[in-house]
Length: 92
Length: 429
Image (cartoon, rainbow over the protein chains, first blue to last red):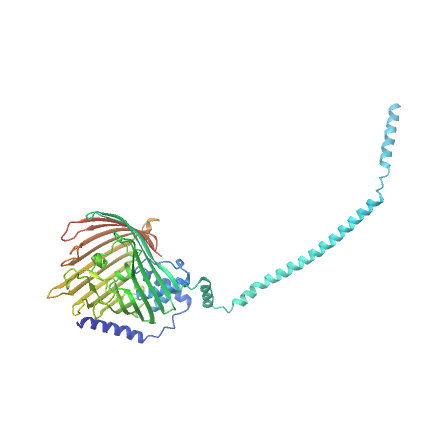
């Protein structure tokens, strides 16, 4: 069995788990307005990285809750940035 | 004299008529008039009373109306925005279960293959959010094979659990996190051309990477700490691994990829991907992503023969311009000292006219792509060294509805050139 892929995996898994273990959910994500402004800035950049950024008015706030969970997992968005984009989209 | 006498008579008659007393009504009629007057008086009194009552009612209503905003304000003064939002969400429904996805209608004309046909497809994606940490998602691919009834495939079916801000665990059948095209760019409403880049065609169409695997992923993303927009994303996974259709033999150069839904050997495949976005927004230098991927596993039933793949991918976006590309290299051990080596690549540029053209031409996007593939021997019906230049014009009706026109010039190294024309209407919903 080749050791090369295993070495790759160990390094990446270790990095992910270290980051994960040290993580405490950030409490200082700012108030609603600050989150909205940050989301407005991030929305075209992150969503537009793969596809045309779809406007918040396309869906209800509750639908964005589900869609953004899907997008965060498929695009590996940093949690803080995903929260800000989520807040921006669901405010429409 | 006679005339004077006549005047005197006439004057007498007129005076008599004027002075004649008025006729006196009968005793019964007078009583009726008095009764009527009394009735009118009574009615007038009732009306006066009624008007008074109405005035009192109006006064009360006005007073109540004046009090209402104060009462509403008092009732909602303690209502926090998040509580109000939750109440509205409850009113509109929570939409924990949601159907999204995409569909398309397509036309394809291929000169050398004498191919001239319409086709279409429909890919519903089912999302179920159990809570803010747990999501189940599945996609069905409903398509029309060349000469059979409708075919339905399970594109992916996975459960995602957000362990914390930096780590998500995904289990099930997932799109292979190798490069960007397979997992993030292949849906027709996202892909800016009708066709896939040559190395990213589906396995049975000549591509060199599997599109899916079954297993477990650990993945996530984090900021790099020196500015908003600069971050890293990472994925590591274990799955059933790759599988090739070897027919009755032990494997030969050019065997096509196939699905490994029920693992054919005792070992597992492994893969990883890491991507960086090094440019924070404050630099105003555009968006750059650089990624690297690997995917490795024993592909034969007995075990011991490895398939190894690595790739790099990058995309740079500045305003309405985008340049992206990917490179893949694969190697597969075969019986004896022979190896099945394949490589593929594409580079694609696009420019949206939104800032330079008036409406409605501001919705037009121009796309150009060059892609190629090399392998010593190709599966039946495929070429070992295909090359393709693709030119496209997209019209974005909305951000998720696009009409695409594409011209392909096929310029393989070892076969005649070819022309293809395609058009597609794709809808993301």
